Image (cartoon, rainbow over all chains, first blue to last red; front, side, top):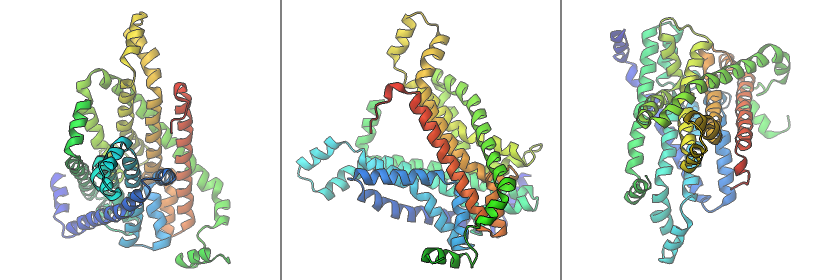
Length: 217
Length: 233
């Protein structure tokens, strides 16, 4: 069985499926960051804005990922682009919620102290708010990334390609080795994403915060 | 049909209307209601089974701290495996037939991390002084667990049930691919037949179900936490 699975990975179309999967996930994640981060920055000082963002994010979480992908079908048709739009929509809520709460939860006293030291609004954002909120923001990006890699598997149902193609092929043709090969590839990709972004998250935690976290323990 | 947005929608869908109300009316009893019932069944039985596993594991992990990291590691890995892949792996196991069982197994697996984590967090949140006071009153360890720790931890455990339920309702739609039933059947049939009405019916009902479950469990969470009735935010 193992040999048969490895044979699937040696197929000429495997690298293409893997490439599609990574491309779908990566582009969706980047576009989602490019949309969610400016919105989070804009509403960082507004209570109402934060409330709206969090509620939109929560409703977004309640919509099943399969539903969002399937709904892209009547509007954008079959294909890679359609899947990309749906995956981007799915990737936004976790980033928006975390960035918005992360920025808002920065201690008001710290911001006051920075203002007292003569820092401008922009400087406070760049040197105080963003570094302190960075771990929370990255946790959101990590959640979103893992979820996007998982949902990209479903792109196959609307002709978006990716590793899900192998699962569908194996399932409909009753080829257990193709089914397992696709499933294992997707699972490994998701776990790598989870671990990789965890490392990134730690790397972006400012030294001072790490010390503070340790002290609290 | 004078609404320009609706006309645009019609255009995008190639002339057919996005929602065929007639179809919805005709097929409510035959297709839609059973799918909804199936979905409620899949989600509730999965959360129930997951709780039966997660509560003891969580209580033990809170007691024997060394067991906690490996438990979160294993359940964390399960949690990060994409659902379609997990379904595929499960049905590859000899003896596991397609249908609701592999779907329920996968949904249980996904709930474990959230439920165990919240059980431990809930038990951790009980102040040591409270436990000391209980012990001083002559309660045994078992009595402390059932009469003091668990009731105090319950709101956080219910918060975990809430997150798990919403997550599971979403993932359960994908289970229809391996004949698990539920609202996903409407979505997959809709894709197959290029019939947006079915996709929308499945999507709207699954979302509504997730929101209703979320609100109900939130109400339960508040009810179980009478000491925090005063709203903080």
